[in-house]
Length: 62
Image (cartoon, rainbow, N blue to C red; front, top):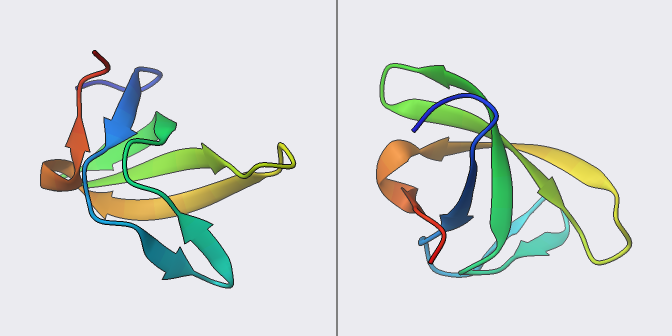
């Protein structure tokens, strides 16, 4: 995985700051540091949200 790549979330659906983040959602990698990645998630209204996820919570697009 590298910065700018689009990947999907493999982690189970969870709530983050009042927003549901769904399993299988497509996100863009913004930054990678060690085993953590900052990704950009777009909610259903199209608003971007930065999330901190483990690299193990991300997978390739099919």
